Length: 434
Image 1 (cartoon, rainbow, N blue to C red):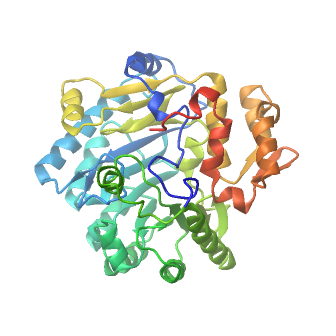
Image 2 (tube, rainbow, N blue to C red):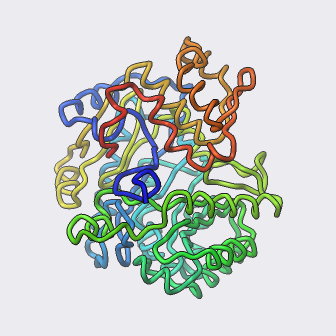
């Protein structure tokens, strides 16, 4: 099997530019300068809150997570989030600005109990409000939910629930280290439907270890029966610090994940089935019931250069043209914030050209790009700037250029992330992504 088709170790999914590996500690003063500068209020602002706790670590997970933590640790963490938000909200760049969107990511935000969630909301509300936000997204692991907790999510203002289903086969879920089993998915979903949210998303992963054609088709059918507003299908990858990656490196075992052509075929079959059921393509890995109403506000703003205030351990943000990330060790993060300092660990100040590349490659993931807004924003013509990669990729059948619109073909859509490095500046094309 060639290395081009094998799922090898490394990050495939692109979510920023320049690559994270290029962000530097010595650039953190630039973040503090941005924080003290008068903001451009025409730019929408949102907040990402990282909750790093999980019941157990999935074997394909590469996020900063801590398993089986007690109530005392969680209380300390909530106190620290509150303190960090206080420190941030006093700064010129953030003060008096309204949050357009909020995203609770993890880890497993739903690991927190109802009581802890209410405490988090109460503590944070003294510094920041998301009452008027267009969208408040909350990631949930099915086995952590109860009817009481789902009601609490509604009470604290969540408008978009994202349920990490991944697969419906218990053997596969156990093999891949997921904490939940299939009965918990259906029970959790019933509670979510009972309480009612404007938007519900479910995640599936094509190519989990042990996946088969027959089982994947069953998963697709079961997902359709649930009739969520959004369906997200990821293709499994093996970033550097996962359990599976360590086994490959340390024990010399072969990659246990399905090869890329198989995963793309599975994702394409899912797409066909969802389209036949009336869903519409929202990006290379997202389908929605209605493109006009099922907006993913967090993604839309992230991909268009919106300000995102990062809160929590290892959280990533973008403020006034500066990328930054918080410290990624829990004790270090808590100590820094409790001493009255912001916990920023590294930063990057992209050039105007790099900002253009960032927005271009991220919007490519949506499957079509309207060129004129980028031309207006950056004062250069992307069709000229990116003429060579566009020509190469059009020739290879990955996209079509139709006047001022770039459209990815199905072939391009299924491997959008693999096309993006061709738009990177040369010095970043071969570097490690994270």
